[in-house]
Image 1 (cartoon, rainbow, N blue to C red):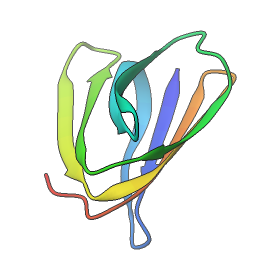
Image 2: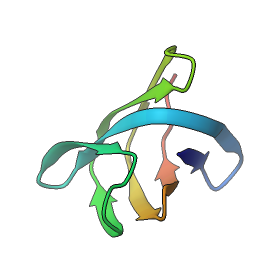
Image 3: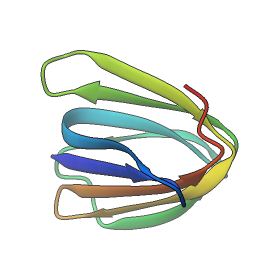
Length: 82
């Protein structure tokens, strides 16, 4: 499963992952391999990525959107704080 995390200014992360947790408007949720197609708005909170090698990457966001389609995840976010 691949993810790309973009802000209006730069690419924050791009790579193979096992899972990602995001702060959805209705609460935090996790995306794993085989997740159904999805587009969702994101609230302020923490994004937690588990990379394919098991390492974790976390950062805060102000808001954004997530799209999931065929094990490809796109996070479009603002206000990234590492």
